[in-house]
Length: 316
Image (cartoon, rainbow, N blue to C red; front, side, top):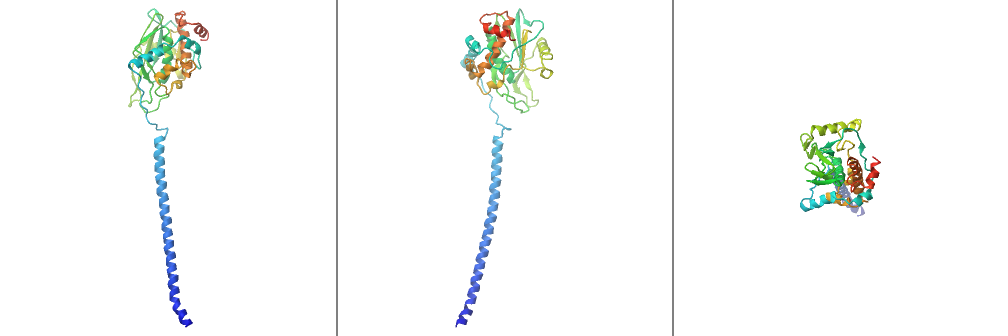
């Protein structure tokens, strides 16, 4: 009976072993499927992550920045207030700034006196797209306002990109344009020539012409904005400002980055704070310009040609 019992149990054992083998095979198959699915999932998620990362990189890459909207200057009463603040900086504020910080001094030049009628002439040559011109105009307006009165001042800004899409330095530097101004003074004449606007031509990459200098004005720039007065590599640089053929300034007198990101109103407001970086740069430059202008006018008027200005005259 024991034998019979043993024989009878063999098929049960075989069935049990077979069932175990089948279960093992099922587990192995299932595990292989899970591994395979997991691998596929990793590949899929990795691919998705790479796509997302690439998309985010494209959106935030500094090499492809989003184009900023061009700033719009104030109009009406706001513009009138801006003009008033810019052209009437208190003498006490100018005196506190003195030589300022980092301002470039006018350079002496020689030649026949530059005049317009009976008055000594200041000749400015620049362009609206130019950030260095934008910086220089602020100081020139402050200085000339001590000798006379502007009318027709309008706001503008330097360019952001040229027609080829290349970024310009110090984009959208807020400033003024001399394209349509008139200047009245008992002491001086002022001629401002804006050679180009700030709107690039996409086909050529060049900025549109704005004002044409006379042959004489161009000859003045050709003579002094060239060797031996400037390095050969800097010939024709703008802005170019001639103070009666007695002094000149080529290029910006201070770094335009000081004005970066500031609105017209903020710049004009900072001119009233003698400790601000804007005042130190703009008013320091204006004081040196005033020193050159007073040399042209035999130190008149006395309200402009102060003791400080006469001290700066000895430095230029």
